[in-house]
Length: 398
Ligand SMILES: [Zn+2]
Ligand SMILES: [Zn+2]
Image (cartoon, rainbow, N blue to C red):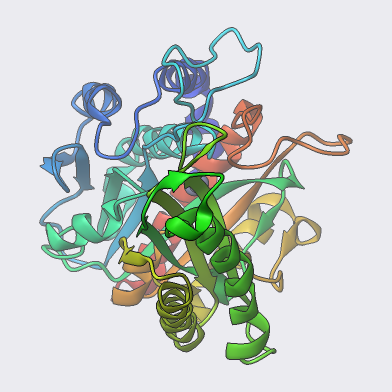
């Protein structure tokens, strides 16, 4: 028998919405989620049947286990807590109080939904034939908080049999879910490059080593990586996102700093594109007589949803939301997700949960300065997480 999680959640909903808005107003960047983690812990400590492990993944990660030590399978539900370095432009009463930071990816909603699941699942702890790990991780956007949670043992003691996560999705309507097997989000390779030339008077460029022209050509030339180095049937993106160099109109600067990212849906194309970037850089150095130092930051692997786990999530969603509101064959996207680290180690699935109000034509996209996780999605999000955990344990208990 499955408890009525939706009804169990109702008395907590107003508090959860207040919690989400408070987190939204106080966004914290990667590995700085001290206040957010403290607020989560404040609530978790009131709940029964929980064993809490804190200060994980560099300080702000939390793993709260329901029924620790109880024999049976173990399922992990994951939420991310970090915000983005974006200035919020909304007029919401709970808009960000921290200049230049905002919850533009909806991780405030993910954290709140998992807290809602904590309330409801601990109420029904006796009916769970195994244990549930509630994983609140830092630094999804940058810095691989998921990898560090795994390094700190989140998948061990007890050993996790499967992991599930949701991501709020502005492109789909409230009450809809996408749970598709296979590659869902891309491998990422953020990089930065320091170019060094020889500065001088803008009127006498032949007496300088001009880094800006070199960078401009490099940015254009690197666009040939996609069509000429990678299999045309394999999606790859090479994007440059930040250029800093020079400070006036009549001086050729001697330095320029460039940032960007490479995305691919398979690891082979990812490696090929990274090597090609390096190759283009070496030819730029030779052509312009400058030096370029390339540094790849932390790569995220491709997020590959396990076939059985994705089908399982789809089945849960169909029961809760109706089969007409569940999609199982959506194409992947070129965004990245460090839930990919969990999916490399255990069977796992991330599903997309609709945020767009019914009847609305559009909704601000993820990482947009007007984005806000829709509070009306919280009940569905928490109920989905509870049902996934409960049913997974029931199905896998001996
Ligand atoms: Zn994001
Ligand atoms: Zn995100």
